[in-house]
Amino acid sequence: MKLHLRKAGLLLTGVVVSSKLFAQTPDSTKNYVQPFSGEKNFRTWSIGAHGGMMSPYTIFRGSEDFKTPNERWGYGGYVKKQILHSFGLQANFFRGHVQGTNPDGINPFQRFETKIKYAVDISANITLANINWKNHKSFMQPYLSVGGGSMNYSTSLYAQGASSPTTRTDDYQQFYIPLGAGLKVNLAPGINLDLGYQVNFVQSDNLDGYNYGGRNDKFSYAHAGLEFALGKKSKPQLATHNPVNSMRTEYLMAERALQMQLDQQKAENQKLREDLNTTNSNIARLTVDSDGDGVLDVNDKCPNTPPGTKVDGSGCPLPTPVTKVYVTEEDKKVVKDAIANLEFDLGKATIRPKSFPSLDRVAQLLIDKNFSLKLAGHTDNTGSAELNMRLSKDRAESIKAYLVSKGANASRIEAVGYGKNQPIASNATAAGRQQNRRVEFTLY
Image (cartoon, rainbow, N blue to C red):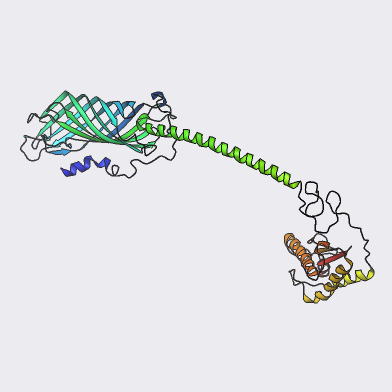
């Protein structure tokens, strides 16, 4: 018999031991309904359908006329009205087959078959564990049910060794009491997996067609199905809703509003403090001369002038007298000689040592006469335009860096690269490409 008990409870195995029985939903306001706002804000009607196993074996043993049960399939449905969070009324319907055998030979009949044509009842449904302080919403809701109704069925009795019914009764109408327990698992808003086990107490001893012992018959129905809540999807289902969560959310919302007011007041106080600091800073500036040029910062249009710089009434440097620069033929010869001796490593911006002496003379010329110099790098058309542009720029910068390292004024040297865009000869010949690979020096 233990084997049949395990079969009857197969649909519930693993679910009852789940560690997620009261798993918390991630959003605390998702199922919020203002406390004491009435059932209009909930979905209170639902329908369900289920199927499972029927058996004369139940958890209440001791009155079976046929000692070996045989599981048969059954199915049904229901309509439920949830009146309170934990209480609802449910109209049920189911049908199926119940079968059992008696192999010991004591009973004159070997087996029976009962066809339940229909069974209808009204049951009270009590939902458990949907009200708690700890979690926002329970992932599962266990329930109990009890009710009363009427069923119509026909029975067939088979004598020992018989293949056709020995006795058949086509129409029994009896009152029965369904007592059940189950678990509903929330699959989605308004959709629940319904796992249940129900014992039906028939108020007669003829469910198996055999009156023996004067004890009423009973049978079990273990089932699984789906429940669908009716109404607007925006409303939570009353049976799965946690009303305590709404009270908690109401408290948290009030606390959050108070915190927002406090944060706003802190922000306003901080703004006042910043305005006061700004005012104090502006007052301090009226007597500050940061660069020491004799002009207060409040009137200084050219702050941070170097020490000792002569300035006007606005604190800006007085113009420096312009000295006209003359480039002599000797100066041009120094630059021309540097161009003629300038060499780089192949495809690189590294200056060869051969070029250093002539570049040293150019650096000394820039120091002595405070000349300005423009360095323009050029290449032939060999290679990509991007590579040539970068190489020409790098070579000009390399010459500038060398001259600066020898004491020339960096601010008076400009280094630019033109790549292959300004040839002075044809790139079709080697000699022409050689002429195009150059760095031009312009003194001014």
